[in-house]
Image 1 (cartoon, rainbow, N blue to C red):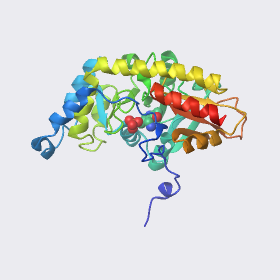
Image 2 (cartoon, helix red, strand yellow):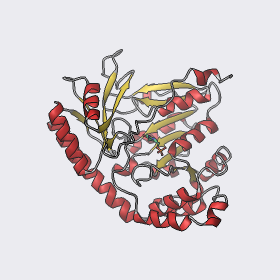
Image 3 (cartoon, rainbow, N blue to C red):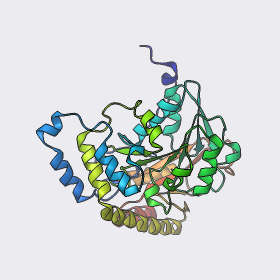
Length: 356
Ligand code: PMP
């Protein structure tokens, strides 16, 4: 069969392991350790009628767009819905990047951006982050057809100040500049306020993390309405189903619950940072729902394996290059550990004490 050569050459994006063991303490894919709002369950039950399942869902998700527009104080027509924010990133790639075009993103960062470039038959510029995890404007390719910048970044959990993002967006304008805000709800700031003054900015969000809805797959983008009208042409006609639309709408409408959960996660993150530092890890201060930690005295992969054998799953990540300052030519690796419940973090620290 004639698979396109660029697809055959890909290694492909491999998501974190999903072990089917209820006893596992799962801290590897940044899921929310708490359940979604109780209102989500009511809304999904209410949407489970013969008629609603028989009919197609709203193609643009207008009910969700109105709710999200109200909560985020943005124009509902500037919201594009997606089957997870990965779907949004795919739509953006298809809409903006010609074959042979150029996608730029910082590195180390979210690995999917490179896969998207490969599928599209595009070139990929991995721009090294500075030692303090900031994108290097001097090295950013001015001719990128599409720039992806996650803020907070994964795996580091670090943030970029809004003025710096706006300056970077200006460098590539009028080409689109995507701020991937999958983890922004755990940070102090986000880039939505830049939208009116930054015409080429597209902000992407997910309901998978802060709203605890990774299982239903729902994400969205916020951009100028005239841009969203173009992007709609590229997406599948009905890319979100009635149940996920009902769940996402109920979740975003329950802001009290959302704030409460985010606060708990931030508090556990800070305590986890202190505990892991006391255990001898070098922990990068995080603004997300995970922490990035390293140590020089032990192979990090062996710590990951020892934890896994004790039914604690964290993410071991290895990159061809690290931020500026990491010795060139040597792989850069670390453990990315999601914020769990306080009990789960107690279990993690107890296991680490034994292993180390
Ligand atoms: N962006 C970043 C930076 C992520 O880490 C993730 C989660 N893997 C996503 C986007 C995609 O999230 P989802 O498709 O669940 O919305």
